[in-house]
Amino acid sequence: MFSKNSVIGVIGSGAMGAGIAQVAATAGHTVFVYDNNSKSLEKAQANLKSSLVKLLEKQKISAEQSQSISKNINFVSDLTSLGRCHLVIEAIIENLEVKQKVFSDLEKIVSADCILSSNTSSLSITSIAAACTKPERVLGVHFFNPATIMPLVEIIPGIATQSNLSTEVKKLIDTWGKVTVIAKDTPGFIVNRVARPFYSEALRIYEEGIADMPTIDWAMKEFGGFKMGPFELMDLIGHDVNYVVTETVWKQFYFDPRFKPSLSQKRLLEAGFLGRKSGRGFYNYSEGATIPEPKKDEALGKLVFNRILAMLINEAAETLYYQIASKEDIDLAMTKGVNYPKGLLKWADEIGPKTVLKTIQDLYDLYQEDRYRPSVGLKRM
Ligand SMILES: NC(=O)c1ccc[n+]([C@@H]2O[C@H](COP(=O)([O-])OP(=O)(O)OC[C@H]3O[C@@H](n4cnc5c(N)ncnc54)[C@H](O)[C@@H]3O)[C@@H](O)[C@H]2O)c1
Image 1: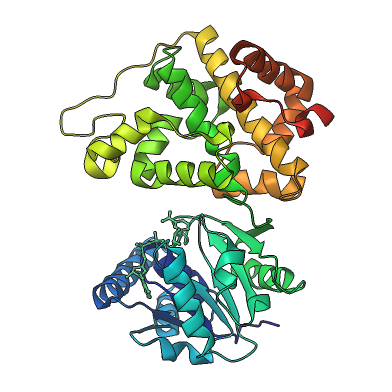
Image 2: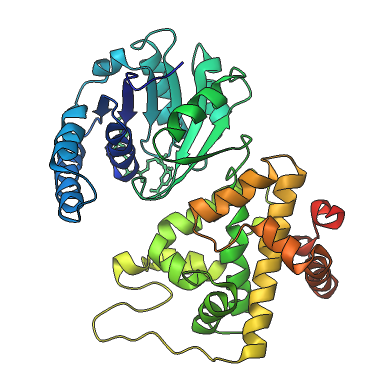
């Protein structure tokens, strides 16, 4: 279906669109990037230039490659320029009505066999496809930020998507040097769902006063080998993004208490304390400020780590149990999409599912909250 000669369209030249365009152009495709904001197009063009200069300086690409990548990308201010495309990847604002309008306009421009995809993080692919006259050609292609660096791409067929399409798009994106997994069209797909307890259980532990933020961050790095602790990571992602993903997943799962957001994080958002980018989040990043030291108490650290890991494994087990993705893909997604040191299901096998189940069951017995219900998937393991 696709080859090196396939022409790729990208709609939206923001953080994700620009990165995706660079990935496709680096793989040798002719790419058309459209945005309805000329400033955003100019910025993307300038960013591409400086990114290529950096890659050249670091000798990651040759001068020839740099030239061919920039030659491959065409920044366009008219949607009709995407008429020659074989695959279009939409990466515009996260708003269903706006996306539906763009897909419906696009269908009038592209050929009958052009494949249309969305990079949405939280909207249902089926609902975007529903705006199209040919929903069978629509699917989700979810890159991670920054798209040029993060290897994972989740491929999500909607319920009307033709059956071979995910495999064909997966084959194409594999040739771009990415790691692809297939997920069902459910809230958060794999990564944005399975990762929720990393943040929410850390917040819960902090809110209950069991451990402070630096200690929780230290515990996850020290005993789990995570590159960053939950609070450091939330501050890096930004609370405008991280909180909103949590709230969206929670709402879309009909307010399942497993995904309930935290008021502490909501207050940060309300205050405009968005994290590193605004100089203050859970921690203070202004000049001269220091991050408080953790309490390096091994017993406490292990308790914190075991509890958060057990909640993560429980969510991975639930995701597998409901057949959202295969065991291999769930583990690949977490290691390649969010840099987890190990796949969670493999981790469960190593620790012993019974040990994990006991941690969850003890939490459930203590709190009597549905949030801590053990997954049937974990019980079966
Ligand atoms: N930022 C992330 O970490 C991340 C990760 C994965 C997926 N996503 C998803 O990717 C999409 C884009 O996110 P982003 O972070 O790149 O956003 P962004 O705000 O950086 O860029 C969005 C771009 O879309 C353009 N745009 C808006 N409406 C448009 C329209 N009607 N037609 C053409 N262009 C339009 C804007 O001008 C802007 O340049 C969203 O669906 C988001 O959920 C984001």
